Amino acid sequence: MDVDGVLFKGHFILHLARHAGILIYIRTALLCFLFNINKISIQELIARVYSRFKGITLEQAKKVYQNITVIKHARETIETLHKHGYGVVLISSGVPDLFVKDLTARLSANTGYGVKIDIHNSQLTGEVFGRLSKSIGKKEIIEDILHENNLTWKDTIVLVDDRNNLNIMHKAGINIGVNAHYPVRQQAQYLIDSGNLAEVLDILDIEAADTYKTLFAGMRKQYTHSWYQEIRRKLLHILIAGVPVFSSMIYHTTLTVLFALPIVYLISECLRINGYSFPMLGSITKSSIRRTEERGIAFGPITLVLGAILALLFFPAIIASTVILIVAFADAAATIVGRSMGNHRIFYNKKKSWEGTIAAWMVAFLCGLIYLPISYALLAASFSSIIESLPLKSMDNLLVPISTGILLMCLGY
Image (cartoon, rainbow, N blue to C red; front, side, top):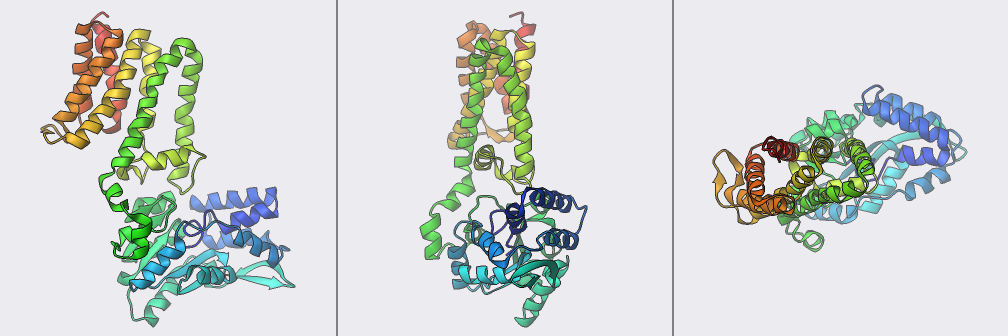
């Protein structure tokens, strides 16, 4: 297991840099960014960062280390892995070796390795050395452990977060990205973004352990069916129904907020796919995205908001309100009914059902009746439900309101 970003919430060097002062913190954050985009090596990153820690006392560094939050249920998970015959090794290129050794004892891991730091008169000199200050250090240490235990890379499971671990990811039998940065996220066999290490037990299919049963009853069902994620997703989807109300009172303010939302959301998503979390919004996104969206940006909310913006800009208020309500409620109805009762697949889109499409039509018709005569409401409901049933993925959030609005305008309403 990696330590920074996997077992630790955040990175030790950033926590210590914050303690050292705002300028050192900004410089360290910039160096980390350059490392993440492959502009500098791990060796250069560690050397340049630790050079600015010169003069920090060992006691100060220890206090920073002790205050870092450890991922939820780390100790219980490692103990359960031990019970099932797994050995656990902690390896870090950023955390000093003496702290990794202490963490190893705290979490009941087998052994741990960290970067070597030079200390003189109980103060950091800014010098780092040892194998883990180099990019191949982790690979060499793991190979030594495998050789000592007569094992191979196929017997290895690695939990990692950033590109410094790509070389061991490709060799390991199983690789798991934990709060993973984009390069790791794209290549990892499994992903853990919940902040809960016990998901490893689910991935490895360890369900007989007492710890697993106590902490994670029902987890497998939740993640297999993705039902709770879908419910949360559709509740967020329905929030767009508030746009017609607010736009009727504060039109320009509503548009301004709608234009700002995709920008903030994209920032949040860029942080999420690199292992970080935007305040509040990041947690909401993580709780509602589908498994297929974990490796990249989830574009559904963007197309949903964009559809509302275009409807407000180009359609009369009545049509705009109608199509926004349809996309808010009809899509939610299609998903809920389709997932709970959908037994008859649509021949041109096997991922959707006739039951879900009928539910979408009924809800769309009711939404249309709020603003339109019955004949127009029937046409809008029929057309929008057909569009919703097509294999468009998240683009239906944009195409349903726009195409339905164009149809109503062409009909002369």
